[in-house]
Length: 177
Image 1 (cartoon, rainbow, N blue to C red):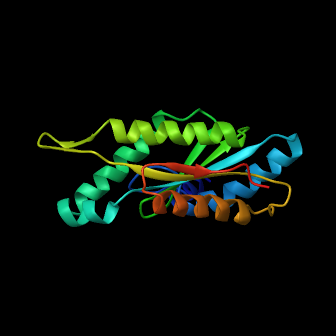
Image 2: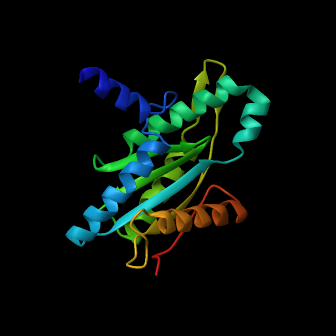
């Protein structure tokens, strides 16, 4: 039984960032949506990624890129509420499930995270401090959203793409509808 628990934890955890991975997100989001609907409370998502991440890898190497992702994951973990759940979605993309959070609060949290990342360089080593920015999209569950959360995730992703198109280092989102 203990071996199964360890294997489950490994299967649901991202080895680089120690955050939950995409598989865990795809399992957790429907559960969170059902809970929010049962309790009649809001739930929101933040989808974010590192701006110009490819250029970090191309300029400084993939090990430095990995360090950036580790530092970003740690910064997310340390600056979210206990009941918010960050996931590494893939590559340099992350999703945060915000329980009991309406669109205004989600937008505020995403802006705070963008500011925390951009204003505090990542100390890669004693010779390299990197200024990193993130872009984010926020979306809040609506009655029209499906039970798996695909439409909710799609809106957050579209807002993320819009944030990148509008110049990066920003948040775009809305109340849903």
